[in-house]
Image 1 (cartoon, rainbow, N blue to C red):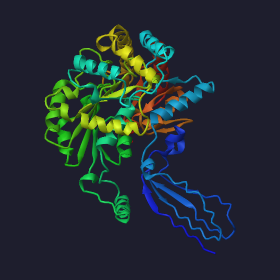
Image 2 (tube, rainbow, N blue to C red):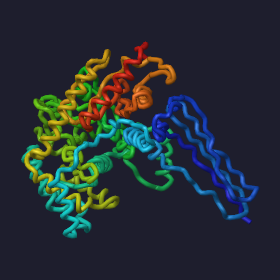
Image 3 (spheres, rainbow, N blue to C red):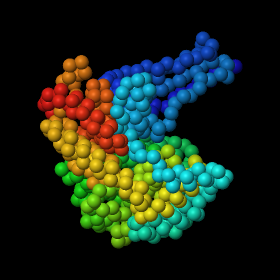
Image 4 (cartoon, one colour):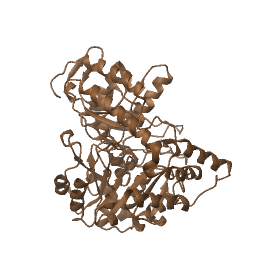
Length: 513
């Protein structure tokens, strides 16, 4: 009889914000804990299995697993380990909070949900009718992987007329939402970063050596430059690509706009991708053309550096602010990947449709990834998108009506929260978010709740006491702030503002923590 022995590999991973899976867990701030997970077994009694012990210190976890099987049978325990790549990624806090708020509403708790970035308007009728007609006319088959020629041609026309950038249909890939377009772009152009923990790098190189594979130093270099505050998914997308997210902070006093001098000081030969989002989620800031030109001059000095310009909110902009596409700047077309979509401006979040435009070499690589994952986007949604682009310049009257309503809501909230002591506001110039600095109230002790020490505990307090769901700023890289989505009716926002103000007025500002 042959004895079997299995030895496991010790792996170190960064598992941050594990509390997100259960929303706002009051215990999530514990900084040192030990959890023991045991493997179950139906093998014979001479089987020995060591436990898996997880030790978390300062939001960093070391997972050491060892399984030793000594048995005369050929049975073995199932390996349930996960990829270190997945373990390095945080769940989306906006999704977690939105799901938690929805669960509370379904349980009968009258929570006002201002966490999700989803317009409260219905999809314009002409778009909906185009989708319905597509179904009725049997337009329900697979489309080309990159999208229908009809839609890609319409996108090229839109980009030429509205954004002053020229593309051909083979330089466009239509995807299942702009989110997919972004992650495919990151995967297509970024390589594993060499700033990973030394143990992982050692393990990675040992595996390569063992398998007889070749690797160049160049392929180990990949840094994604992300101005903060940022959309929650950007750093996690970089980690999925095994690249290193490099966060460049911007303050509320600078309207949360990236300082070109800071950018220049942080760029290296390993910097591969700069992500810009204008108008911005979560701040609503809009990059003026002059500032973008300064950034472009810095970018031009680095031949490996590409720019991903996320322009999903381009039509939701408030005069006198004006949107500028980064690819339209001199010398930037060749190195810019422009991402846009239909979810925000056209109130088509559930239709799931976005696109990327750029030099054919890069866009073809994005299409290759898509071809092996989801394939082409919905045929029905693509017909609806053609109708959306036919509504007129910048979406025509229907989009203009929505933007007018968003502006009215923004103005109300800026006035309402401006009445609170200590609250700092950078007035949004676009999108439908307000990113407010509430750090004045950190350090407050609340009877029956506890200490408000950061953005997460403040949002938890507002959810429990005010029954309003908001997103803590730490999810976006700025723990001094909280994000309020005003993609809700004015009546809803008025009720939410009253609840928030009432809850805040109960606080006595403490010493900054």
